[in-house]
Amino acid sequence: MDFNIAFDKIICSENKICLNPHEFEIVEVYRFEGDTNPADQDVVYAIESKDARPDGSFDGGR
Image (cartoon, rainbow, N blue to C red):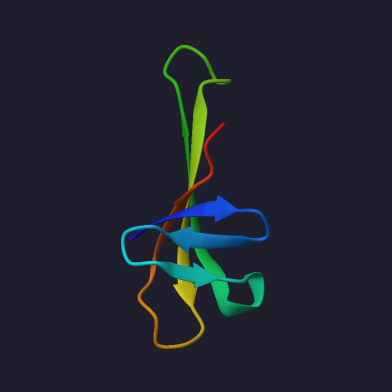
């Protein structure tokens, strides 16, 4: 699933799941840089919910 930031929580618009900070944990972080420009970067966070909701990822963007 793909989550996005919405004020003080993250949401998945595909199935209307909304998680507050205390409801999920960041379990992995991946950082990508452009070949010629280190400023051209992106960060992807793998998240895990603390209850039975599905897990997913969050793209940190620029």
